[in-house]
Image (spheres, rainbow, N blue to C red):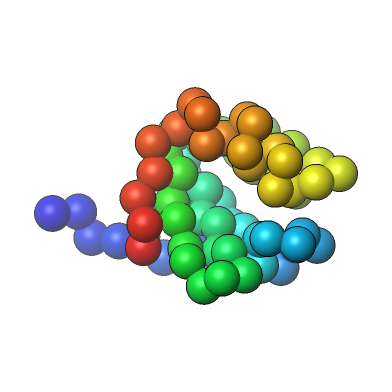
Length: 73
């Protein structure tokens, strides 16, 4: 069993997402409902695009969720 990685999260302006972080190839997303998910295989460029997106939630749903496996933390 893999040891969970610790990722520093930074707040974002979003109606659904509380904060995000990135380490290696893992994107961490903490939702306002309290759930935290790690999306695997996410590049630093994708993370930067998520942070710059007009809507973090829309970017996550269209560009990250359909293309990357995730684990709930």
